[in-house]
Length: 396
Image (tube, rainbow, N blue to C red; front, side, top):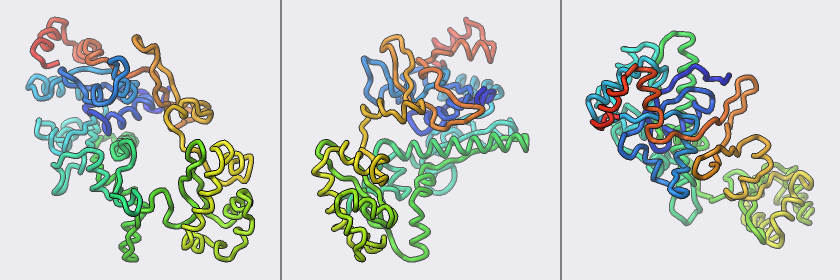
């Protein structure tokens, strides 16, 4: 049994933030039924590179889910959604703020009509406030939430965090909120609305700079890969790749200095405290960079890693290297699931390891409408001829 066994989730989300949220719930054992438009389906099916025409991004992001098609812009489609809702514990959507209400599914009203239902709404700016109706994408979330103001090098433009960080952060907060509502329902017997704003999520990750600015008037500088409070703390080019080294204490600095053949630096009063090293960060980083540049990544790791000076450090791994990383393999984070065309598809494992009720990755994302008959006949009792009529009318 997994932690969320018995929890049924109706997933109206699309593309990234919402599907990631519901994938987390599915990994933990929830029965997630993904709803897609009959024509085209989720944009994730065609918004990323395919492998031989197979949408592997979609298959990985929507793992562990069953899938149906339903056109919510169609009156009969909305009627079917109302018939489905009593069979589910959680409804999750990530349309722009107010979209669901515009279709007659106002989240607070849904919770009043079905007191045990939990409605999770993920949007760029939430369901309230003057920006609530604005559309958003990852880069909008990162800019509006302030994260880009911290990211990048001093003379370069503010920089978006790699990948789709804002979307994944919003998905994580969505899953946390829904899980909290599920726990609360055990006590109160009632569901509630979970309103998650991407801007709110990124604002909460600003390393407490809003607090620091309000108290001191200071604003953070963009320092690239360096740190605003310590040095050396950076990414350095070796002969055959890149490594990061992070030193945040005097003890670690002395260990680093000895390992690079400069033990005198550890006793130099100019570098003895973190403030001194930070004030002379250009000099400190230049010394470390010069040492790294003469060596391979493996040589740097041998000298500084757990079998050497035990200074926090790591190679900068690329995706191909991560698929063979012994730590990720040991923790079952690289999972290979069977696929009828490709043979197998690699997906991430479950990041949260529960000792008694662990999650699992059981299957790839569904084909478009793969479980229509299973859901519409099994839950709603629709006859085969009715399914055919609905399909021909474009409702499902």
